[in-house]
Each structure stands twice: as C-alpha cells, then as structure tokens.
Image 1 (cartoon, rainbow, N blue to C red):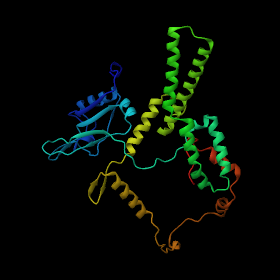
Image 2 (image 1 turned 180 degrees about the vertical axis):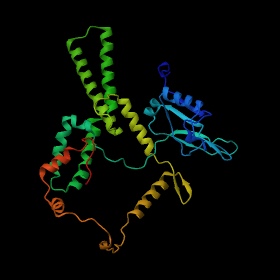
Image 3 (image 1 turned 45 degrees about the vertical axis):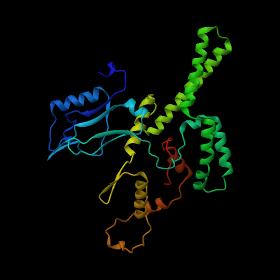
Image 4 (image 1 turned 120 degrees about the vertical axis):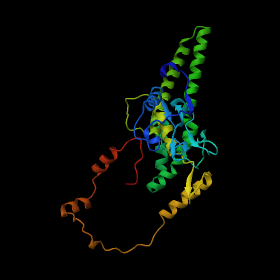
Length: 321
C-alpha cells in the first residue's frame, strides 16, 4: 500500500479502535479490528506519536486510547521537534489531541566533536596548534579551552553541511544547463567532475554526521541510508523532550520554571552531607584473597591503557573512568 502513495502522510483523529490490548482498560486479548489497525500502521510505515495521557477516551469506568496521531517518518525528518499531547475535555468523552512542533530553547547546546571533522586536513592542523599552546594546562581545562577555537573553525571554515551540499548541487546544475545551450570545453567538464567529487565527499560526511547523532550501535557500515539515521536522531530528540513536570501535585509547563525546579532538585540530591559513622565489621563480607588484592594494587601498564582506550567506540568520548 505504501508504494502507491508518494506524499508524506499525517493521520489524526478517532480511529475507534486500539492498537494493543493495554490501550483499553480491562481488555486482555486482541480482536480482528485491532489486527487490522496494526496491519495498516505497519504497511504504511507510520509512527504512532505518544501522548502525555494513557487514555484519550473516558466514559465512567471505561477508558481507551482510540484517538491517535500517525505520522510518516518523512514528517519527523522535516519537523524533528514534533510532539503530541492531550488537551482538556469538558463535554466530550474524548480528550482533544494536539500536535505541535515547538523549538524549545533550554540554554547553551553542549559541545560535540564530529567524526567528519577528522577528514578535513585543516582540522588536524588547527587542533595540533591549539593543543600545543595549551600544553601547560590540566586535561580538564585543556578540553574546555580548545572548544572555542574548534567552534570558530567549524563556523568559519568547515561550514554547514547542508549548505555545502546545496551549493555544489547548484553549481553542477549550472554546468549542466550550460551544456544544454553550447559545447563545453575540457575545463568545464573537469570542473564538473571536481564539483561532483566534492558533492560525494560532503554527502558522505552528512551520512556520518546523522549516524553519529542517532547513536545507532546496531548498524555499522552496512546500512548507507542517511534518512534512517536522521530519523533515529529525531525520535531520540523527541523522547528526551521535557514539556511538563509534576511539582507538589501540580502540572508545570513554563520552561523557565521547569529548568529552575530541575536544577533545585539535583542540587538538593547531590548536596554535601555530614558523614555518618558506620561499623562494617558487623557485616558478613567476603574477604579478597591476597593474590587478587595485589593485582588491584599493581601498576597499570601502558599496554593495558592503550588496549582499553582503543576498545572504546571511536564516535564517543571517554568518561573520567
């Protein structure tokens, strides 16, 4: 069915049926109409957006999730901040369902190094130069200090990947249009080959960029579908999006208030506490053998550090441990 529809789909409304039995209070088995709806969602490759309420239809003690928003993955690729939530219900048995694509600004974006930077020769030159100048600083301060030059280099030299791709595509189109009107010289064809080579290079960089953002560990170099990784990154961003929290039994939706409450919660959670005395001799603990104790206190060899470091995923930064 999907192959006969060439436009992205967005289905919103009352489907009068649930997808799984858990979406109907008290239900325990699948019905034929449920299987039909499941087949529709699967065949059309639609994504069911999750609401902030378990049920969208309530009538006394009966409750069901029969209202839903089904979207094509192409829609989420264009609007990655898409979210769904329920409004209020007054006279109807249905909660109103709302779809929004808000760009919530939580503050400064964390710095992230990109794998595709390593393919740009000027990046390694810049990094080596800045790293040598910071040689007298501790590692933690080095990493903080080098962010500034890298961000500036990314903005002024490396540039926006999509804009680079668009620029090369436009230049190739100009050469092709020129070829329609007149015979091209060898230098024109050479220029087109160079542009095409650069276009392939930047498209490959975009693929690795999307794959890194998606944090996909299941597929390595087998799948070359950039849209797949872009969709994973969009869905991951959607799952992490915080639009409301409960505080003292009340729902809070204002972003500045949410940020203040979250910061206050973790400050209280991790504040320094007075140490309490505790005698562990009363516990029945297993005693480590002298051989194991010596191995824990042994000097860590350079080969062991290198082996552990190289075993890490090259797309992710190692932590303090």
